[in-house]
Length: 124
Image (cartoon, rainbow, N blue to C red; front, side):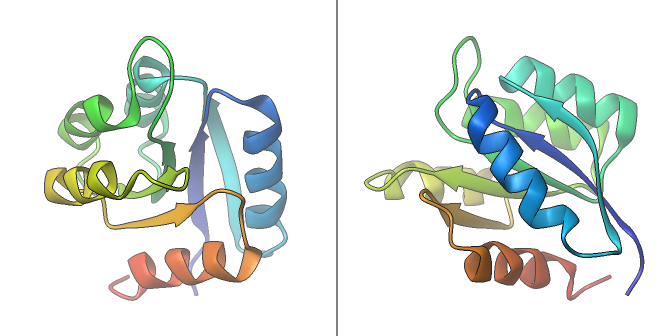
């Protein structure tokens, strides 16, 4: 398995920290950037061109759905995993239609987070 570079985007510092810890428990996974809204997600995509970005749906200033197009324009090979709260199924479907590859639901289950990563990296 090749080394994978991640950007974690969520407006809650606690959620970013939790996801980062889960991801970096895998020796070949490295979180190279973080963001708190869609604008920062696009900037991080431009800078790092990550293999995978976890992207919260609901954030201030620009939400995750609105950010997908900008992320994929500047970093087309980035695999986006949406992070949603319960009850956001229609928004997850919109995100998938726009180019997101998978999703995880808060509160996080580490097994599901790792499965989502595996799902989007099977084509690597």
